[in-house]
Image (cartoon, rainbow, N blue to C red; front, side, top):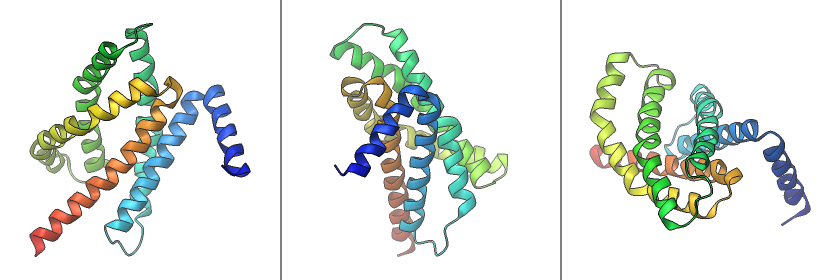
Length: 186
C-alpha cells in the first residue's frame, strides 16, 4: 500500500475509534453517493442528476450509517459474549426478519416520495406491487453478506462492509432494471 493510502487508512481508523457514529454516517453517505453516481453513468444519463445524488447521500448519511451503527451495537448486546456458528446464524436470522424488511420498505418509500418526488398514492401502489419481489430477492443475497459480516468482521467494520456491499448491490439492481427496460423496448 502506498504511503498516502496507509496514512489515509490510519486516520480513518482513528476517526472510527474516536467518532464511530459520525465516521460510519459519513462513510455510508459517501459510498451511497458513489454508488448512485456509478448507477447514473451506467444507466446512460447525459448529465448527472445532482439532486438525486445528494438525496441518496443524505439517505446514507442520515439513515443507513446510523441505523447500521446502532443495529450492530444492539446485536452485540442481545448476543453478548456468545460466539460460534449458531450465534452467527441467529444474528443473521434476526436481522433478516426485522431490519431487512424494514430497510427495504423504508428505502422504497424514501426513494419514491423524496428522491423522485412522487405522490403518496403512486408510491404506495408501487411499493405494494414491487416490495414482495424486492424482499424475496434480498433474502436470497443478504443472508450471505450478514453471515460474512457477523462471522468475520470486527464490530467497528460491519457498517463499512455492509455499506460497501450495498453500494455494489445498488449498481447491480440498476443494471438489472436497465436490462429489463432494454428487453421490453426490443
